[in-house]
Length: 374
Image (cartoon, rainbow, N blue to C red; front, side, top):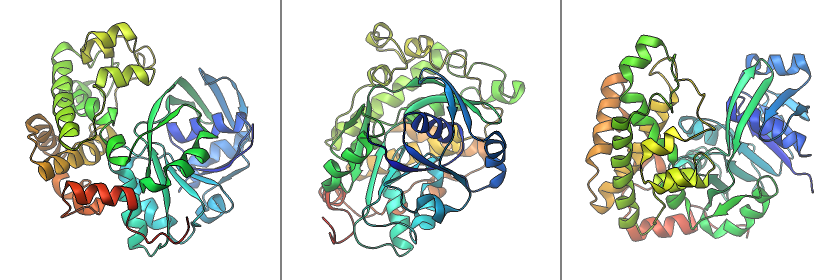
């Protein structure tokens, strides 16, 4: 295996899982966090302990730093493993440091993540080609288990992946496949954005369990106990609206239960029922994950504001009704006191305001930059 120099930006569950896994697989990893506090336990231990389905071992990244320029310098792939709410911020922060030949890999990009990142980077002065790509969902199911330890319960065997602009698809696929051979390249980031599993399930699971979350401070199994038959039916309705939107945009995607199975989160038998409730009840990788302790959490802020909002915005573009999605956006705002319609990932924040379907397709293929390096 050829070693790839990769900057892993983010020291949460996914960032630590990626840093440990990639290091143990022989890649040259530079782990970055914006705060030294998050890195102190790793520095103190001299590395990271990994356990779970990706293997076990003690990983020693090449660099552990809060200096963004040092983390990015010389890396072939700059991988962001951060909430989608932070992607625009990283676009601005990285603008002075990126070279045209570096691949920026959003793991995951969620919905519209590449568009938000690129719009912010361009506004911060980055011109020329930008090689951005994303997966629809994080490559790992994982949790931090100690000060310098992480456990991976699932590595997705197949994940939707796309480049922005799409004309760079083959080039970025080659770079990212060196890290994750199981990625599955799709047409563009509109299609991967429509395959965001978290936005389908997390808003119904969180918002319909508000009382239980606040009363117990998250002391229940979120995916298993929190997905009752009624919650599952709402997830199914969100999925129906998403599938109709995907058809209207000419970017067909699989139903939630089938994509959930493809990602390794449930059984083929459960997926065959077509029921989100059944699929979640049979999700062994997610079975023991506890609920967040409050609604001040990415399952709402990220998956409503940067998941459902862009879907709703795209639906308005093509005249597709999304009543359940729109209701969850409204309820999420009422519960948290936030205006997701204004502060979420809007068409303006994605750089696609005013485009029709044809204009959007051209933008996704060619991007907003002149092709100065091919």
